[in-house]
Image 1: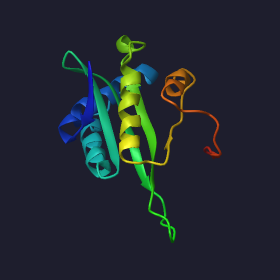
Image 2: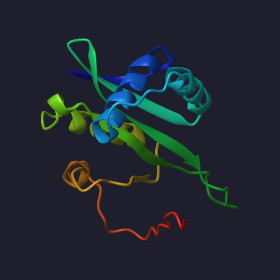
Image 3: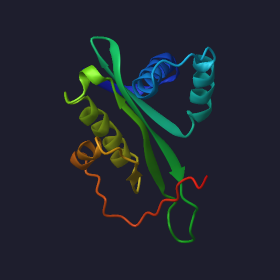
Length: 149
């Protein structure tokens, strides 16, 4: 099993994982335009998102991406960046086998190497322990506003 940064050539594999994820949650979806919309989204987002792909025996088994934000500059302080970890998914047959941990190791190493001031994410109940093992805590000062309608 290996985890690597994903590029434009990997958009179809990422799109397929997104389909699997959606079908796992909602059942089969007939969307003939999805692949085209995904490719366009991936191309648009590539300047501010970094994606990783986990593969086992040459097949995609997991993914995640981090959206990069640049903080507004302050006089006398260097510009800093932070990241929002999103779209973390591992196929059901590979869960609890270290794939998620390897994906998180890749994104946290990237954050350390690129000097991100923080990584933020929105966990599901099932994923909290994965993120805690990767060093995330609930001890923060972030407030969230959900949908109001």
